[in-house]
Amino acid sequence: MPANPDAADLLQHIWGYAEFRGLQREVIEHVLGGGDALVLMPTGGGKSLCFQIPALLRDGLGIVVSPLIALMQDQVAALRELGLRAAFLNSTLDAETARRVQEQARRGDLDLLYMAPERLLSDSGQRLLDQCRIALFAIDEAHCVSQWGHDFRPEYGQLSILRERWPHVPRVALTATADVPTRQEIADKLLRDGRAFVSSFDRPNIRYRVVEKRDGRAQLLQFIRGEHAGDCGVVYCLSRNTVEEVATMLAAQDIAALPYHAGLSAEMRAHHLRRFLDEDGIVMVATIAFGMGIDKPDVRFVAHLDMPRSIEGYFQETGRAGRDGLLAQAWLAYGLQDVVQQRRLIELSEADATYKRLSTAKLDAMLALAEAADCRRVRLLAYFDETSTPCGNCDNCLSPPELIDATESAQKLLSTIYRCQQASGTRFAATHIIDVLRGKRGDKVERYGHHAVSTFGIGADLDEQDWRSLLRQLVAQHLVEVDAAHFNVLQLGAASREVLRGQRRILLKRRAPGSERKRRAPRG
Ligand code: ADP
Ligand code: ZN
Image 1 (cartoon, helix red, strand yellow):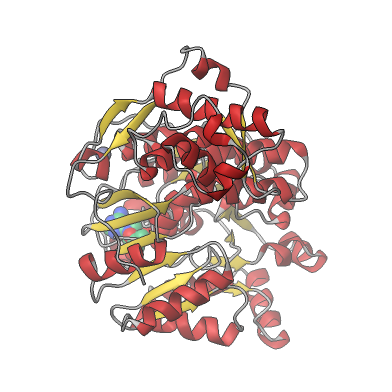
Image 2 (cartoon, rainbow, N blue to C red):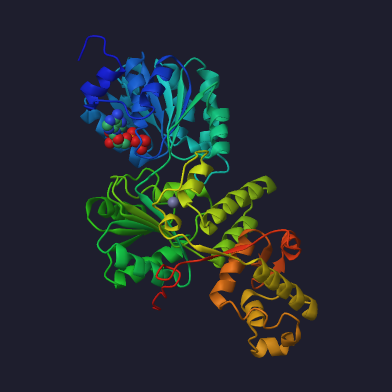
């Protein structure tokens, strides 16, 4: 190592890498010059060096704020292995060790100190920082400042104190997930005239795929058996209950599945995580409690049995697949019930009106992605402000759906909802409406006299599945609203008039034979 090493020397001599990757060099130079930086790179993109190298080159100690205790330990261990002077302060340390670490920090015997945010914000944490010479602040997982994000941590919001108390110490905020408003929020709360360094979010080896949910669990089983037998994977479910049930179901089918959710004991979670990391071919069935900071290279698939509530969530969760660069699949089963359920969750949440509005907008963007008939990757990247061309490695690129003009069918569906409500003075759920459309004279149709409404039987040209698919699309676009509090009855949305008047066109996707849509999933 030369006497006065520069960034490239450290990269070579300490890390053993020949070249900087992507935007690393630019970030490092900017921070060395004393600037604040927002670093957006996908997981595995090499964010750590962006603050580790400047921390070594600048005078003093680099303070790294990280919300993940487990990750902190790993990172510190890895740095020590490289011969660097690193330590962490969090609730897992005994008083004696913590005291020793603080002493080292004060004496200037550390290059990097990782701290949990609550530790940093505490009085003793602030006092400690006052007594140290600080090279920079790195704020990892910086999207946790976002009130609208799914990883919101209140302590993160208070980190704005850093720029107030130490205005001359550069700050680096890092995240793998942030849409444009979240970026703004990070910059507003944590940085001062910060520059954003955004690398591409494309994960070209991940194949995105969305299937219509009929019997989700059976479809999942078929997907794993047919395409990922023996592979390591993650299955995300919305609730702890579903996690347990699906893990049990898969295990009964001789798939090495383990549950993971916040309701399990800490020991059990740690044990399952260890097995997932150490053994081959484990399928982790989990809520979103599983994931942030998990870095296993050979995860071959990430399956969603319930729809994520935002594109960021979806991107982050699917991003855990294929870190080794080899082909991996992101598989999502999606149905009308997902839309209804997610909207209901927003409605029932205790959040204020602004939060609900934003959550609804995020959900709608996710719905549009799930409903899309064109390249999923183009849409995904567009959400992160990145333009691209059709990828050739998503379901819609690989087997383009046939699009049929379904405006007239949509009009029939909307009219039937309207007429049944008019005729009976009450509202009805999807099954009934579809029965009326298809001219099925069941008990309920007879009882309400709906065989007499003018639209009875005018929709016999489409099968039930097509009607459901059409309805799902109308619901996703708010043309029909589902009242989840009242037996999922349907009601026309305000914009439905545009469709009824022929001012808005509705397209229905049809998959080529042999693709997912035509394959009947086995029951069981
Ligand atoms: P992130 O924090 O963005 O998820 P990391 O900083 O953990 O990513 O880096 C991911 C992996 O890439 C690590 O194993 C790291 O050592 C490696 N890496 C980072 N920068 C380089 C580089 N310039 N050349 C080669 N490997 C790199
Ligand atoms: Zn594509």
